[in-house]
Length: 527
Image (tube, rainbow, N blue to C red; front, side, top):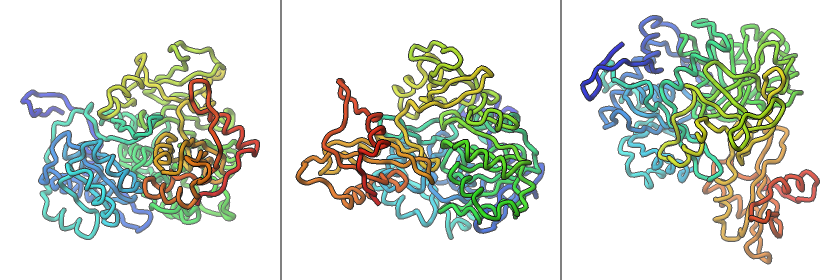
């Protein structure tokens, strides 16, 4: 297909996920595209495509132009997905925002991305409006609530095709590093389209007969990218409700909708396989069970394999910057190579290197680095961080791995200072920066400690500014509640006289972890 660009030149054009939706609306208009697992709302490809076109027109009428950023803040729902795709159809760049964030954190995403518009759940509108006080460039707000139907009814149903290059940025997904400030990973239309294609090829797809469900929130790359193979192949996507995870209700949903493939983080799978009646449920439609986003024990994996003997248990490993899956472990390897993250997916090239970018021998620990069409183009408006991430011409993951004699990869440690709790990334520097602003805290370090439910949770090790007047747990919790989302807040706090440091002044978190494991680091619940 060719179109005329704004400059007047005729250019070839790739496929975006907006184009994919339009295609299925023409080919199988009455097939179910999305089902809301919480409300039971069901929409066909034709219905979703029409609503996406109208919402794109409303965004355009409000001033959104190709390349403009549109922040989308909402709970899991069909209208949220429609807002994502409508932004792309309008030529904009979608910026999903975590609905758990407080106003200060939302404001950072708005200002850093330069968003000019926002689409928000009615229930979250007060948080957005509070954040807009710091982000005056956001001039248009559309709510996903009672007035959405009026907005769509007033918009044009005419599908206006825009010449959007497939290398253009489609999403800015905020992730963090050791600097303490989130970075926006720029994922292009090509990144996500080819990730969906690679997943369908690598893991297999049943096309229009597939029914996908993910336990991940849609603001998370696992939730967003996870549904795209189903969309690509004309299948149905079941949208799990946001809020507290209920394993019994989730299994009932899997059973009722005859889900064929699904994704949950290890904590969710642990709750599912622990249900006393799980063996009696009719889950015969399930052919593929995926997990990722946090470490899983071999005990849990064996329990999953035993509970679902007719299904493939698939390990998915990667990160936001890679759209996100880079390696998988599937099929018979789930048992033979249990504990491994598998081998590279289609369209992913990997190396394991030392600090000088030299390949390390098999069995030796090194950093896994990537290149290929699934890797992001860079971090939004952060050229120095982008250059560092791509030093040597490969994307540096920060994950330390080893490769066995058969070419399978095993994660040994995380080079980046990060905690993974229940599938959510918690970046120590960000939380430490907030804690350091507490007037009674003189020094602080955050470490991850084992947790039977969440895998690990954050422990704050605090040095009082005045030893005679240490901060109370209540004041620390109140301070964090004001500036941090709930899942980022420390679950335990230890008050110490000083933090261990090396000669250059770097905090020795390994020592803190050892002390905690030995029981010499006394901590108390913060909440």
